[in-house]
Image (cartoon, rainbow, N blue to C red; front, side):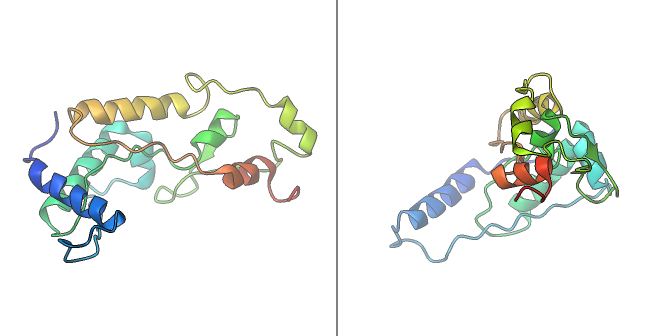
Length: 177
């Protein structure tokens, strides 16, 4: 396990309760609106591309983020792991390749020519296999890796897969809208 700090379990549970009570309008013992400030320190100066493509570097930044969030700010921060490959994971399972134009910007996918040039092209798309297509296998592995390396101490978010409008834009461009 890579954690070099104590996890304040009771404090985290207290914070969760404050947030839960606020959402449930149980405000009798609430003295503030919950706020979570999430620092993202990067003491080794990894580029965004390095963090997206190297699970060990991403783990280092995630652990550093959690430690800073717990130690530096007296807020309602709930530590979580965020496996991040960029928002191009879903697009990649349909054959679009991530492009890193700048090492400190998220990847994008090339839309010229569009994967879907006319509506009927939708029916030509192969049904993707999440275990073998695009970045999805790496994303699933990344979730497992982050959880295992932190001994399952923190919840882990899902991959950023965008939404249906993102996907429509990425696969079709803007000509069919």
